[in-house]
Image (cartoon, one colour):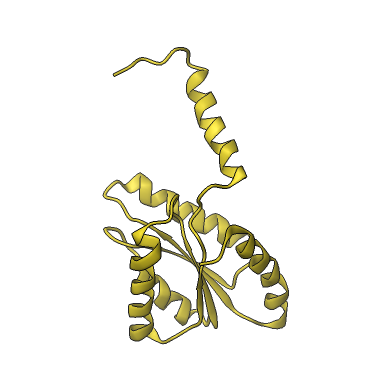
Length: 150
């Protein structure tokens, strides 16, 4: 897995690759939930990344419970003519899902839909940008006054 900085350098290189004709797909993977709002968030993230135009195709996928599955998302990237894939687990922390389950699902998808070179990024992890998000969420609650313990 690459570090956040390695991914940033790779993304910066995508612009020149895109100009040269490389068709890089981005597979954004969430855990999957029985709660629709959790799954909808991942779909919105994938849509927003697609709008930035840095990748040939952006496809959301879920490790379990929800659809599209990782195999379905991977198949969509193959069908879209991608010649390589960046896989981003939209997970907060590294763990067994990011280290073992997602790579295993990708290998199974390759066996089923054809092999493309893929690179797995690290999860979101600790990033200074996330601190701003955390502080915003805390400020939203703090503005409502003292918390009630339930």
